[in-house]
Image 1 (tube, helix red, strand yellow):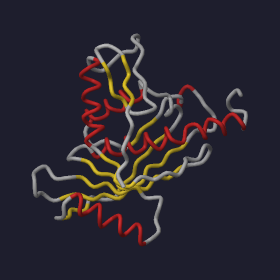
Image 2 (cartoon, helix red, strand yellow):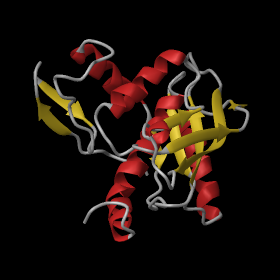
Image 3 (spheres, rainbow, N blue to C red):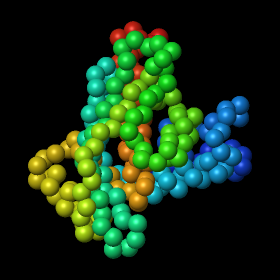
Length: 209
């Protein structure tokens, strides 16, 4: 049940760029954290290394808190090492009153390593879909298992299917990239829901028609 993304080629120097749908190349006037090619290559390596093994297709609430429960399966550092399984939930909320203080999105408890936060800045430079959103992650302690990632995902899929559970996503990632898996999953849910959310904001008078 893996998600296969159709990437579009953005023709901008230095050469063709591959970015996920909904993301655009930054304007030349924007300040980059790294040289453009290195920044994009690093982002795409991390983005492609993680996977949404069990996607969820429900939309997000426009005016209420949206809960995105997930199970994150991370591989070990060496072949044959134990696999970690973490259950958690991402909560996405939007302030009812927009002020300069909450104009920028707020990501909380996504990454264990400070360097990984640069990936969020790279993402935010390419989409306005996260504007005004507060995105908070909470998770339980990691559980170590001796099965492979594929075996763990298969067992989890069976458990969720037997329980008729269609709201819980399964994410997989190499070591230290669990935060990137959460970022990718959250990004895809926000971008997929954005057209409906914008339409509702217009219907309620929060945006011009």
